[in-house]
Length: 114
Ligand SMILES: [Zn+2]
Image (cartoon, rainbow, N blue to C red; front, side, top):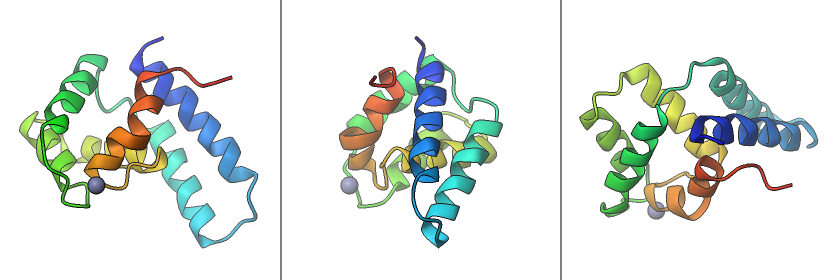
């Protein structure tokens, strides 16, 4: 499995989870985000994901995703792809740079738990 396969499979799993909830504004927003990420072309190659996580890991979290945005911009990732990466991180529970490591990293690097 590649990171891109893991991300796709985990996005599908997240969609199934959100679809099982009572619909409200938060649920709808989450589903819009997930569907946007599923339809967008893979924003980063596996090598880029690896490099991104490595660079982000040595930064201090400012309780937002500013560090993630900065690293991606430094890598020359276009803004539309940065938006897709942020949706992916948030879908996997990464709402700030340290949560990327607490929650999102396993959904990026590991296959769907069965
Ligand atoms: Zn944080």
